Length: 434
Ligand code: DLL
Image 1 (tube, rainbow, N blue to C red):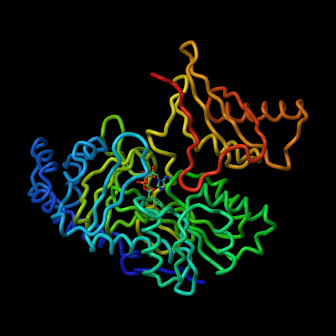
Image 2: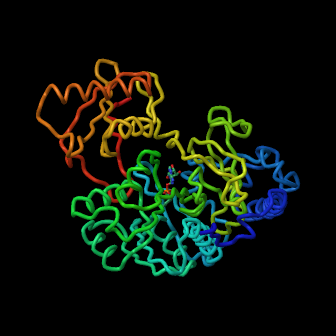
Image 3: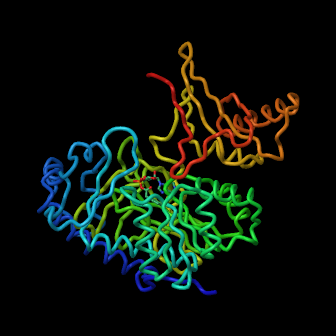
């Protein structure tokens, strides 16, 4: 099968033409924001920049950053770029701390967002023949609505099941012969586990492909899900502030996610100094939206840490690829002074034959950080032989030390003792009161 595209002329556009398109759109977007978003205009004035200074994407660095704190300051309507009566939709982040981020959409914004999701769906090879099971949450979260809209654009038969009620999900997948599954990777892992328990092997499951995102997941977890369900699993990235899922998506190469650069310009900056870093460097991802009307964001700091890859891709798409984000800079734990990303821990666990059911518990006792990793034994490893458990724990402690440079207390727990997630998994419990 050849590569499938939803909008081939744009997805495979020569880079020079793409830059011209981005420059044209950027000029218009900056003018739109200057005219309609007083909050950001003030930031531009403070920096001494006006729309006349932005003639191409080479001038992007002159614009001020927009941060999560700015979104909080202008909550809820302060960054709106159109009249409220022209908006048709609102979505919000799943954030549990502070004020939630709210994003607004005109019908045009919804349309372009759904196009981005349709690109992600067709990149898996799916077509109008497919049955698309959308088990991302519906409602304020963008996952359900985004993939749902994209699935309609492709013409799939869409099953808007949302998350939860796992056994019913499995019944629908089987009864309707669903071929494309959309949900978070942690929920996909749970569905796979439950299907295997119910006696369905990879050949009995009708699914062919999955689109999993909204949280960090490791390559090892991808392999595990692919094997258990007999599918090809694709990563998808996005955030509410930019629309939702579909800002970037994986193609058949499964080596990084193509950013929809006709709608979003990506930069990588040093999170401490704000300096733009050279191609290929790791740093904080910053996005500028080029087409959004209701909630236009210029140089928005995502706090996601990753790298961009400008090399040619075998799929024919020309848009830059982003690596899997390591996690958010605010997910990063600093334990005894060492930076630790949960995704690094997950890699060690999966490489040692464990599943992705784990918890990281951090506390501070006598002014020293304690660091515990609790992980489930698989049913095959399960034993009450203390010597065997201790040997396994030591083995994992050594593996984690080699990856992170610090010692963790590893506790092996019984299969199924850690609560499964139906949306984004919560794996870190940080009890430190600092
Ligand atoms: O999670 C949008 C989404 C829905 C993406 C469904 C993909 C699929 P928020 O709730 O605003 O939006 O959270 C955005 O989630 O800044 C990243 O930190 C993280 N994230 C999203 N996709 C990925 C991914 C949705 N593929 C935040 N890998 C982002 C790693 C991801 N992290």
